[in-house]
Length: 301
Image (spheres, rainbow, N blue to C red):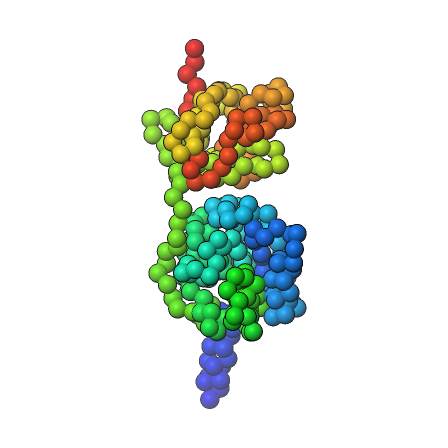
């Protein structure tokens, strides 16, 4: 009998640990903060549990920019404790046939989002454990059934809060889906014949610096030393919009004001800048899946 009781308690503990997250809930949207939309989402979450620790990733994703939403999740989620629940609402297809899902990563994080490309980069970075479609007949804010245009409040915030608070099991979110998300195509880093191709996923917005997805490990294969010159060509939808040379340096002050430079950014990815000026503005460069870059050692004259 004692063994049976002990086994039952052990099973209950395992079941509870499978439900419990770390009570951290992180919101991302393209809503901005000019109205009460974000506050309403937080109100829903606090109505689920006042013990939740709620944080903002950003609410300044450009309107409808699914790609940037994907990047910001990838940029940020790694630094939160394992078991965090993220709610991302950049949803130009709200009310359409696009699926509302919860993605569970290999480290136990949960991402509540429309499956519209938002999960492209985080699924690559943290890996997919499993994906469930949100059953909106069960998992939505009570009394919101007649609302079709604010799933961020009625479905995502409510479901995310219940998951973070441990009131909803991942297995009860809804039906299991194939472990594959809707993905946005982009240029992944490749090295061939001492030339690296990559993508410009985002800008360092405040300063106009150009961030690429070319990491230090692949860049190292060019065997470029600090101070040596790099040849850079930037393309938009296959059309060249910038071509020039710049030194590979550790700090912006290594070159004169207004001069171009190549450096490793805070994510240890190759980036380009003008010292105390906006590379993006001056050279008419933006970011997204349609922006690509080709780099190589500059040919010595």
